[in-house]
Length: 342
Image (cartoon, rainbow, N blue to C red; front, side, top):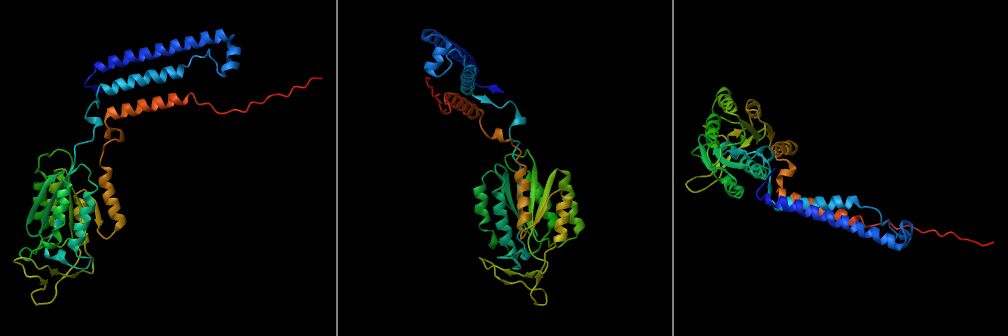
């Protein structure tokens, strides 16, 4: 433990000595008063207390309180980084915005559900740096890892309408590679790094190509966690209408409504190889465990969340409270014997 103003510690020692001497002198006056009243038994009958008793517990409590207050005034600091919260994590939320994420097999759409879950995840990160990236056939970086979570929630509010017919496909390997590179941006790059990928697992490439990039990320110490959206039954896709974009139902080459289905087996493999966790967006229990996993990695001890000055003052107040309770006595019934003269 270090102190910014250690001179206050000497003042605390002097104050503690004065407190002890004052209480010792007070005890002497009590003994002299007892002698004046006629001795121990007479004084106890008159005052209801033992005036000869030395209140050692009071001396100890007030002496320690003086030392603790002086230590608080000396501006204590935690001794080293081992007792401080670890460096903040850097987490990238990577959300699939391809055409398949417009499928309505979940409410309101897969993309809408992924955005909703991402907003809930942001609330669990505390002081962690969080970034936001979108991907389809290409990647779109919205926010590098930042502590400004309010800005991220603002960006998330516009995502359900950004899917574009000009980039309808999904290349998961490209998304993972670019997300790993994006995780290294920002003002700080120390601490644990992780990626939370939200999507339906539909991709225009082989599983081997995807897992090769996942292994590369894992070898760099970046864990990849996955949140799956969509259903096995699948659903049709309706692209939203926006500026420079014609909305409408997505159809295949023959003009039949295209059906998109959740590829959960691939997503689970990505999480497994990426040394991460998997949860389905519709599974509330799994999502709670998923969020709890990140909350459990906060890593800062309970006592390290508070300034030492606050803890010392709290301890001093507790000492004064205990000392004041020493004067409280439980009421006792006085039984007077009935003496009869015969």
